[in-house]
Amino acid sequence: MKPKLKAGQRRAEIMEQSKRLFARLGLHGVSVNEIAEACKVSPAVLYQHFRSKEALYEEVINDLACEREDYVDAVLSGPSDFANVLYRMTVIFVKGRIRDADSVRIELRSLIDGDEIQEKFFSNHWKGLSEYIELSLQEMKETGTIKSIDTRLAVLSYIALVRQVMITLSLDEQEGNGGAGVEYYVKGILNIFLRGIELPTLDW
Amino acid sequence: MKPKLKAGQRRAEIMEQSKRLFARLGLHGVSVNEIAEACKVSPAVLYQHFRSKEALYEEVINDLACEREDYVDAVLSGPSDFANVLYRMTVIFVKGRIRDADSVRIELRSLIDGDEIQEKFFSNHWKGLSEYIELSLQEMKETGTIKSIDTRLAVLSYIALVRQVMITLSLDEQEGNGGAGVEYYVKGILNIFLRGIELPTLDW
DNA sequence: TCATTATAAGTGAACGTTCATTTACTTTAG
DNA sequence: CTAAAGTAAATGAACGTTCACTTATAATGA
Image (cartoon, rainbow over all chains, first blue to last red; front, side, top):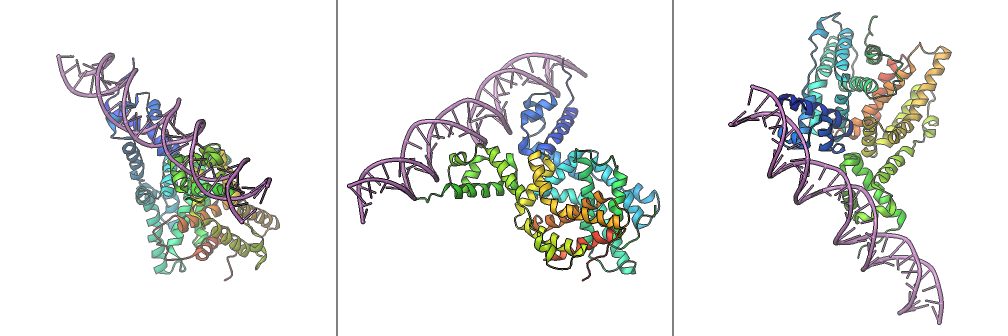
């Protein structure tokens, strides 16, 4: 006898399986039957929980886009200079994101499609990181700690570097990373970035 | 009466339209009918030139994969130090790529989909740039011009920065770039990169 | 030169399949 | 018993693909 799940659990199960499939194959790459099969239910079940395939897709995407990282610990749990705080924030960010590669995949998809989802991704996931950089640089500029610099370009560059780390760690199957972990990569790109904008690097 | 194109021209037309559509919507996002419609011919025509939809797709990708920038001029047409050569190579690379945004889109798709056909495209396109960096850094390491550095990480970082420029210039519709051109962005990220790996920046 | 002919290019309807979605019915738990 | 949770089967539309056919173009021969 098959166990019957409560509506809420079934819903969650459907969304989990959908997320996996949509991330890897895209909206048009997966059929409703395949999703149902992955959930081990008949296709009709999906329609008791979601209006349509597209509605399910949107909900999955939206769910991912709205997740937010919590940086409170990152800021408080160590040295409070720019480099160290940014390091801890980035590690938290990257670890949170690559926990499921699907989230990274879906973000990249939304980047290509250029839909509104992309903005949601940015404002929920990247904003914390980029605002911290932007405000810090602005302040350093005013106090003369740093030479004149294109803040926008700096933020853009750091995002690019972090995204590359996420891609390397979560999408490159080949595992040719030499087994290097999140900390190694983040430290590596962060130091490149810091030297790049003429700030002192991590002191360890 | 409609004009009839020669096989070669029709083939080229089909591939051009397909590229546009595949880039924006992906293999499963476009139907054969839509491609035919874009070419203003009946669907059957596609099958006189390509075995199947998938074969057409592969050929489009493959076509992109085989394009390669010519860096001879870049190397010869100015100062021959690492920074200046890399600058000129990068400008050529970026200009060539963003000439059609579709190529950039397809590359991003290939990152996500991770299939082998597209892998080829990816590695081939960046090869010129990344090999130049890799070999140069290796040489500087041996001659002691540069401190010990993770070459792989450096190459990865530069690719990330260049890709970000491409994305900004060719996918971000919002045009909030302040109208800054390729040269500005390339110079910006290149200097960040050079300082990042402790090499002298562009001298102008 | 100009009708004749051969062939390459293109058509449109229809094929079988798969798609997303719905309907009518069955099972299970409280 | 009954409401919720499930199923199997069926739907029309859209899909990729093929087929029998027409039309434009170019080569031929008198």
